[in-house]
Length: 407
Image (cartoon, rainbow, N blue to C red; front, side):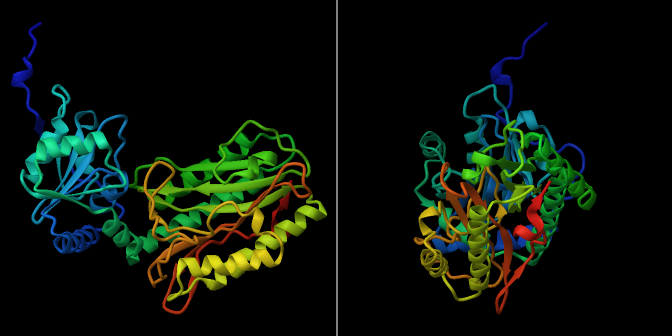
């Protein structure tokens, strides 16, 4: 067998295999996003943007990559929009994006950056993502593109993603409805003697089937459930275990459907069979904080102001010391693997003012340490769309003791 020399192999090529696949949004949606991006690039003096994060690449092109140790990119110039992908993915990155695609080969190190330079050009003003580009990859960018200067586009692209289009809000509504389906499936599976894992699988499977029914042309990936019991409820992101549910356990239901990179969530406190008086008092206090917080979400109020008012509400009830994190966050292209619109979180240090078209959660959580009356983590989570005069709650699954003492 003869071998092909490395010098005869291309650094990159176009493999536009098959036909374009249906994307979650019309081409006009992506074109509008690019038009605004180019306006932001012009304002920043950037001639070529080099995106490397899953969230920005998906937001502007429709393609959600799986890195598996390989670099991926999207290069946007005044005239071009090109995803840069690894050969292992073949034609899928082109099919699952609305724009052009170049495949780089792996038989010469740094062919990714050669492909980026092929589109972005050298000696340009290059935009990048300071919250994502590693020091190693930044050095390679400078070596291969020799930029005149570099401009961090993290902040401006995040601000763009924070304001949702009507098409995005429609997708987020569907995601919230899917999360409710998972919540009901979990509720039905709760009883003493079953494992956290078994309950979580029931919720995940129900959501996967619901997504497939609503979006028959989508990719199905990354939908998950965190279902916690007893001590495991003390953290919002504690993973599922094999712990067996017992009568009187506090539970935390967390469903996370993923639709084409878009995250939604439902989070609820429940109890198995009964809740003791101390637990009920804490639960009801957190429900009251949740309802109060929802009432505060309207245009013109800042994230910091909302946070301060909920803090005061809990402090009056001697519960503020049990708060463990902020009261809510934005939605869009994000998951536990990627993305974050840190400028739209209900925290003391975020002064962003709420505006129509933003989508944000309300999710107060109180954690009572083990050994104290009512020990466990209490959290309710709804998704709110900010409108012209207030908010619309798009979460349907009920919260509170009347519905969520089960099994």
